[in-house]
Image 1 (cartoon, rainbow, N blue to C red):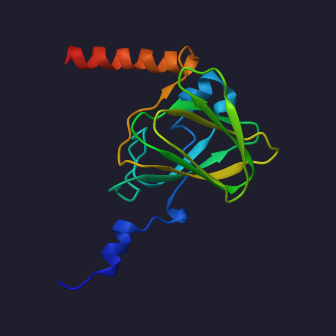
Image 2 (image 1 turned 90 degrees about the vertical axis):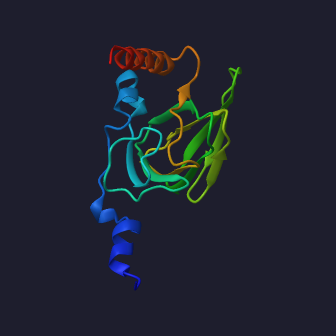
Length: 175
């Protein structure tokens, strides 16, 4: 059978013109703190949120998306227990936030355009756009379907995550 470049393109090419920013994927975080507002544009895989998006390239080994982080906004500290996460800054300047489990100290690392940070599993990571202009970054997770992230113990986001997990378990138990 001859190679069909059109079929290959349909399956393996994701074009900007066919995508849109998803400002709702992390809306639950923004409802806790308006500074958590940000948008995602998925290219490969659905990411940890697993939102239905038929327009992505099917992931085989990792996920890849872009993230818009408005000026003053924060991607809150979260932990992936199963996967490393990469932030690559395309535009702007941000502070990467790193915190060890069972520590209160948050370390800040300045990242400028074309800088990159890889956070290993088991380390809290976040991002803060402390500048005056929006930042654009590439986000990559090292698994097709990463576990849902957890948040710092005692934080509003972690309390909400635990509440949602209990609600989900109750729904599953009733079926």
